Structures are given as structure tokens and as C-alpha cells.
Amino acid sequence: MSAPLDRRQRAMLAEMGIPLWSPPARRHAVGRSPGKPAPVPQADARNTPPQPGVPAPAAAPERGLAALPPGVSGMDWAQLAAAVAQCRACGLCESRTQTVFGAGDRRADWMVVGEAPGREEDRLGEPFVGPAGQLLDNMLAAIGLSRHASSADAGTDAAGPGRPLRGVYIANVVKCRPPRNRNPEPDEIARCEPYLQRQIALVQPKIILAMGRFAVRALLKTDAPIGRLRGQVHAYEGVPVVVTYHPAYLLRALPDKAKAWQDLCLALSVAGGAAAESN
Ligand code: SF4
Image (cartoon, rainbow, N blue to C red; front, side):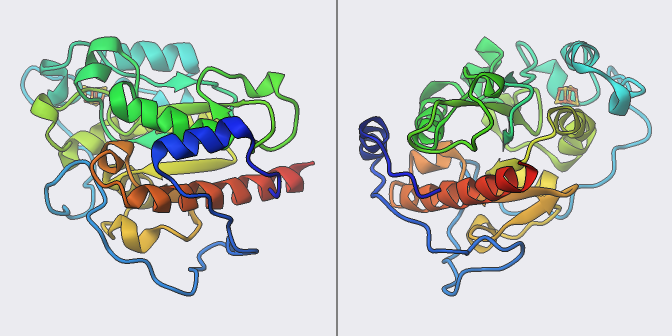
């Protein structure tokens, strides 16, 4: 955790407009906030006001839709990918070009959860592409992660500056693009949620980075704003969760890039602690 940034990572951070920052010691105890509460900015790329909690999926599919396939919670990767590709469980299937399943190292210690595919993701079938995806890739590279790397090839050291790039798995809360990039509706998130749950269960990450309001809502079941949740370590099914801003939001809110860097450093310290415990 104390390894200094190398030249490549400093350059990346400079490109991102992020000043160098060192996390204070021992600020990552679960559920504990740092002394100074963060302000409460609008945290997301999407702009609708907070919705109430995510409801349970409707029992009967709407006309033209089909129920979620049975047994999602026991599927392997191939079965899960096939089920998502054919899914018609919510209205988002009507407007998608293709589903966006996930990308990266399926055995990674790190998992990034985003919100919903945008236009480029819908076109290419991969999460976090385009300018927001490039920013995410730069942010991840700065802490030693890449969606193109394999953690199995990087040894057992925790990810971090100065170490070989390690893998990360990236997925969204919903797998189909909402029309005109509108916010996903609560019932759409609820219908799609079993797929994300199964992805997390298969990856078995040691740390989850929840990016944006809808990722937070799906994982932590809270409507609290990002600004109030970041700076703490939450948990999803026993897995530590660190909350941060969605890269699409950061592209429009340059001052908050520094906060996102703080969040990454917090996640890095948590992941380092988890790796040390498992060794
Ligand atoms: S968003 Fe999810 S639940 Fe809705 S159709 Fe796509 S894969 Fe199925």
C-alpha cells in the first residue's frame, strides 16, 4: 500500500486532472467514516431524483416479455451469458442492439459495478467504452488494474502502483441500454438483478467498486447520495464495497475526480488488507 506511484501512473493521474493523494492511515474500518463528512454532490451521470427502494420483480411478465429463466443462481458462466443474451424479462429488450454482459477477468479480486449500457456499449456489447470507459481504464491503471489483464498471471500480491497490472471484472446493474440513455427504472433493475448477483457469486471478488447511484442502490439497497456513502467501507454479501462516482459524471464534474481518486485509494487499502489476510 505504501509503494510510490511510478512515472506511468503519475502521468495517468495528471491526464485525469487528479492531484497526488496519500490515504491517511487506518481509515478503512468497515462502516467508519473519516472525520470530516463529505459534501453531498449530485453523484451520477443520470439526473432523475432518487427513487424509492428497488421493488421485487413483478410476478407476471408484461405482454411480449418473458420471465427470467429459472435457475440463474446456479448457472455457470456459459449458461449465464447465454441467458442474458436471450433475455426478454423487461422492456429494455425492445430497444437494445445487444445485451452487455460484462468484461474482464472472471477470477479477479476486483469487481467494478456500473449502471447501465450507453449508446457505445450497446453498439459494441462491452461495458464502459467511449470517453467514460477510457477514464475508468485510466483510473484502474493508476491503481494497477486492467480489464485486459489476468490476475492469475500477476502473482499473489495485491493490486497497486508499481506492481504488474492485475485483472478486474466489470459489469453493469442492467444489461440492456435504456432508450435515450434514460435512467433504468426500479422494476428493470429488479428484473436484471439476479444476473449481477450471479456474476458476483462466480467472480468471488475481494473488493467491489460501486460506481454511480444505481450501482449503489442495487448493491447496498439505499437511496443515500454518493457523497454521504463514499469514504466508508460497506458490504455486499460479506464482500467489501467502496462507493464512488460514475466516470460519466466525473467527465462533467472535474473537481470530483480528486474524490474519486481518494475512493480508489480507499479501495486499494481495503483490497490490500484482504489480500494480506488471505495469505
Ligand atoms: S435489462 Fe436485464 S432483465 Fe431486462 S431484458 Fe436486458 S438482460 Fe433481461
